[in-house]
Image 1 (cartoon, one colour):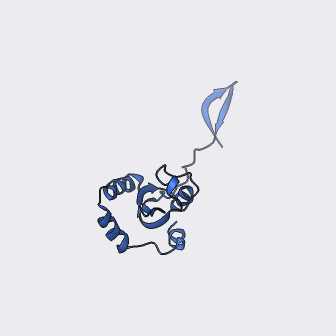
Image 2 (cartoon, one colour):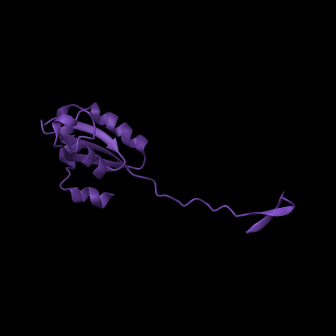
Length: 119
């Protein structure tokens, strides 16, 4: 500890040198499309895809998906920031059903392992 010129009760006050905060890797964000049990499509974004899929399938996800369980992850994209994921979500929501189906066909999710490898 180093001593400073500050005094408390006539004695120098010890100060610990401040450490830089640990560098965190930025969290990834995801935009995803789910296929619901009634064959409708739901688009959303999250920072933890596996947990979000579990939330949708246990009735703790979006109000839209609760009565349409089980849901299946059919497509997702990864982004470095949540803002980019949210922008992509908005863009996908503006697509027609056939456009979304073409998007899904370009890069379908084949298994849950795909998500685990990404995380």
